[in-house]
Amino acid sequence: MSLRGWINDLRTITRIYQDVKSIARRMFITNSIDSIIAALGVGVGGYTPEVNAKLLAMSIIGGGVAMGFISATLGVYLSERAERLREFKDLEKKLAASLKESVHWKAARLVPIYVALWSGFGAVIFPLLIALPFAMAGLGIISNPTAYHGSLSVGLLSMGFLGLYLSRVSGENPLHSLARTLAMGVLAIVLVSMLRFIVI
Figure 1: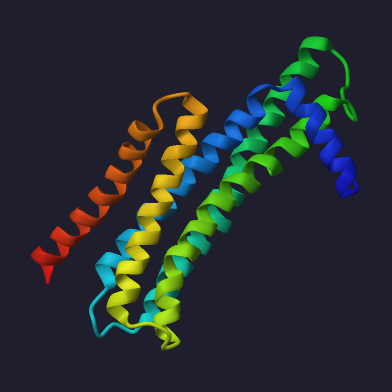
Figure 2 (figure 1 turned 120 degrees about the horizontal axis):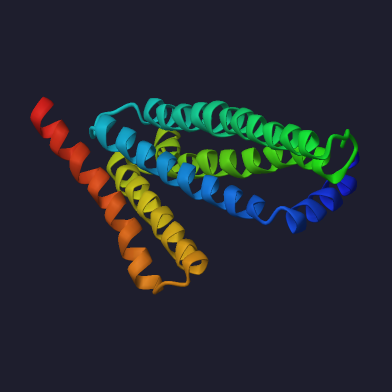
């Protein structure tokens, strides 16, 4: 199937199946938040002024890639595929007819890919951004302390972006939504900082 054909089929499917965009959006937001919180945790937990910045950047990137491509993409694809195939087979049983090559068959194949791509995108892109300051420090462009504060800033800005996006979805006050997601990011930083103080 060509890319244009895939897109046209997907447009038709999203008109028929009203839940598709909502599911993809939820997976994107959920896995984005998970990946940001995890990346912040690694950054705060592993940072010292003398840290190997390249190693810390790779730790954040490695976690994001593993979560993004394995769990958030492949895991979500397999889960969504199973659900769509079950619904498709149930529909065939109710109609007592084969629906192969119908729009419902196309939905069972394409929707899991669509949802998984959005899910994985959110889980990968934000850790890469959060790791970028440490990567720059590893190249000697900025200092480790600057990279640390820059990474935290990117993480909190990412949480703020998701808060504003959520306000568009829900129709709620943007400032309230922004405050909630920022509070999650700050809480993660505080908790890991407290853990460091106790352990180290």
